[in-house]
Image 1 (cartoon, rainbow, N blue to C red):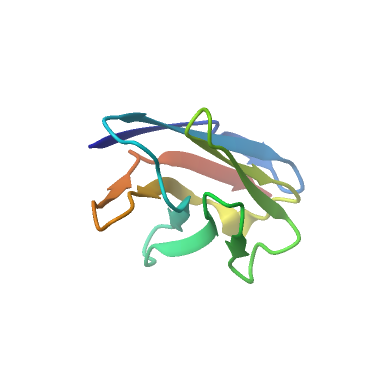
Image 2 (tube, helix red, strand yellow):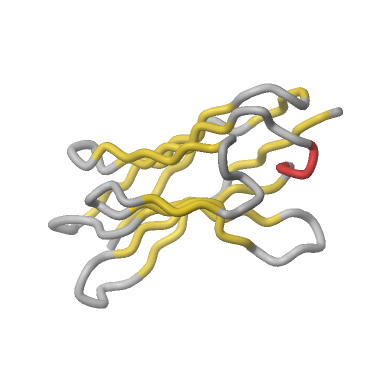
Length: 117
């Protein structure tokens, strides 16, 4: 079992920055890939960024060059640095973690990010 706790969401003006954090706890030996999805009102949940425990990253085209994902394996924490925020980045952001060997995918409770114009 993995418990994920997110923090760092909030209200920011367009062009501003926010940093999301997601800390994992529970009974596991190690965590595989971690990342962030987001869901805007009336839209499907979409993958924003992911990172393997070896540090390989992937990003949605819409956030490339603006968002940076990183992780601290010792602290079982994943971060999402969001710069040059746009109003269309407004959404609930959910972190996830995947345990190896088919042990499951776990989600955080979500954190609201609102970007005002």
